[in-house]
Length: 257
Image 1 (cartoon, rainbow, N blue to C red):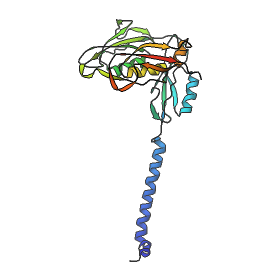
Image 2: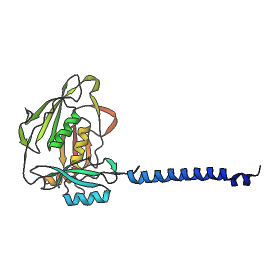
Image 3: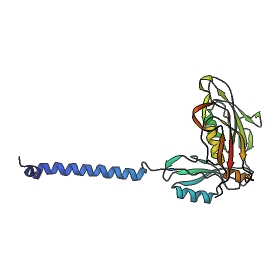
Image 4: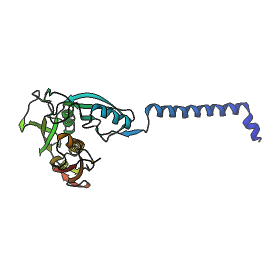
């Protein structure tokens, strides 16, 4: 059989042209889909805590994300107009160009209504507190059939009812359940993290902040927010479990740079 004649036949040529066209369309579609969705391109969210909005925008631009001011709280010891919290949180992997919602420290305190957290999971309750501009204080575990189910909410060691007006930036303790079948967790590695991010990571693992040891050169609340963890007790471990609700002590220092 004459191979050259076979490939020169009009029918065979049309089949080959059609196959090449289909392949080309598939390659082009895959390329365009990747460009449009930024498929496979993720960036790490910076820690914007304690930055001014302008500083946060600059850092976001350098990291390949965007920031928007979503809400405000009032923290007396914190610089006015500085970033109090962010969503998604620092260290998260997001698509390039993602918008990060910032909650900033307002110039004046505002009153907010206490949400009803009873019946929420600990994770849901933490998200609600953050959305309302409130701090999570102590996680107080008590024997119950459901672990991490919120049983009570406390303000200044006293039960606080849903709807009661309190200052934004207030600290709320949560009494949550702890069952025998699910009462252990692990200590995360927070070394190198800034203060609030480290606190968040400790709470993520159902643990409490015990003592916080600041170096002597940390003199103000603003300094504490810029400080990073250089030591923790107990040390991080993904193999040795610890009972939920235990304390983790943090040692922090300011980066000389």
